[in-house]
Image (tube, rainbow, N blue to C red; front, side, top):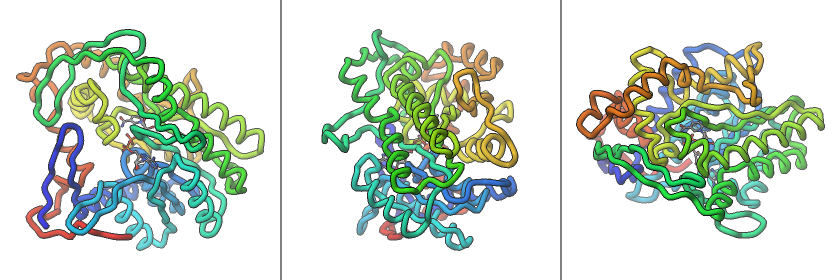
Length: 394
Ligand code: NAD
């Protein structure tokens, strides 16, 4: 069938398998061009491995450091006549490329929050890979069924304590408008922490330790965001920010556990704001990203997920480098985004952005290109007029 993008709000309900494979290849080529990462990880478990930062971490580990990788993700598989969600195609393309390169790569598609998937993954790692020396936790999800209580927690993206009004953009229609969001209830805050906080990461680390699947020196990393003041009410000080505080709490606990047992360490990396499926759902943030891209591209400092993750591995975690922590004990990959000069320009541009000035003052066009690429559309060298089989299996 001929597959075209069908954008509905902040999701695209179609994905292109050949385009997704081309996107994976672009990222692999980038990592290879940067050269081998010395003393890199050898056996890596990535939880949340099929898109965004988790996928970029997996590609960097495999193609930058020749690591064997195990990925856990949660995507809708393809069916006869119906395309999958992009992570399905991404993971198939990644595994094929890894195997061609002689690298071990296995994946499980299922709910990482569940005890059942943890058991399955642990059994498969035990049988085929052995203890891992790096665990990347990069899950972004709107809901979690709690494995012990069965309660369904749904995360919300809302301010805390106060009503928040700011500009936002409908990235599909290109319309800038004001959005007012009422503060979250106590229950909504607790639900968001249950979904996007650190409990599940801790559960994974405990399960891996109990199964004897952490190698000497094992390191664990998860990702967060802080951002500038313009987004604080909806991000840093909002429900998601409170969940991220809980992720930092979990990082400290996991770090203490790893150290007490003679493994390595756990830490949080604060990454740059980028177009991903997760970030496109947050009000205000896509408009901020569009302004940010414009400024950082003009400066030549723009990075995507793969550049960020390659930089994390090559200049912080491995390659003879040392982790460079801020005062809060976090690695800062948002350093270029947070430069005063960049943020000063954002503060200047922000009040001037309207529907009419959107294309001249922001990189909304670049945002849309990146967004469609997440679904395999707009990749160079892909013939989008050609008939393509949407149903692909591992
Ligand atoms: P993403 O939506 O691209 O990726 C999420 C991944 O989680 C996918 O692989 C998905 O399959 C997987 N997943 C979702 N629910 C799952 C489940 N129940 N079981 C197993 N896998 C599941 O998101 P992203 O933007 O790459 O976010 C990853 C992390 O990076 C998050 O912690 C996010 O807060 C953080 N982060 C993102 C940004 C940004 O701007 N995008 C910036 C800084 C930090």
